[in-house]
Length: 381
Image: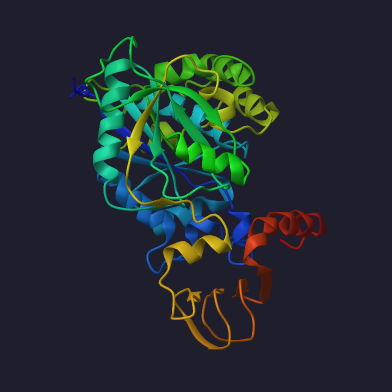
């Protein structure tokens, strides 16, 4: 059995672009987030994501913080920009965006996409399958990427057997109920997850707004749900064809309308929490759609070793770097524009951006986030 989306549904992609990407310091800074960087060559990660989104969505909304809004508009001027009231992680952010989209578009299905991931071929067909599942079943849909290695830096999704599940049969290969979500594991657990057939949690989702708001109406997001429902209506009318009060296909004014003070207060009061922890892990009806496309979150400097071409000694470098080595192997070098020489070193990430230089062993690349916290305390980030 193959599920089919309602042809009258409007697919709205929400591109999450409010984070900084602190593990990619010093290229990523408080005023220059990861998604603005051309780490894989031009265009930027944000521009690549919006381009992918346009292949699967009728409208594209970029959700970001106020300080990044101008940079978003500069890079993707044809996308609608929605500014979140405060930075509170993906749970509150996606609740806010989903509510606003539900008010501005007729019968929408929301597709949530991180703005800073590397995604290969096969993305569009997988997302269309997920949209169809969300539209036909009212489930919250997550996309599970088939692992290529045991990875301790990603969360995992465990699928349940489909037998007896309402809304599908054993003959339906397109989705499975989610049995559980697993946190980032240690090395042994990662190997066991891959052996068991679990999927990487890529942070890609699809849902109908009513289904998501119903699932979010519990701690810790219930106060924000209440505020959005009671004070979050910006007074926007909607025409029968799904456009806004001005008749545009992309209802910019509806999504940019001022929030009621109660919404901002509720948003600022909620603790930062991911959408996985806040909603998906406790929701009753969550589906996973398997996806086989190439995927990487490019979250730390060691990840470039997986996505850039290496020289004969295993060294990789970003565009703009002229690299010269003597007895140096398996290093990652990143710079906006520099001539870099390495002698007798291995397994390092060497990063030079603006007036900042970072040198860190590749196996400690995740610890850059600790450095950034210290820099923030000093006002140096």
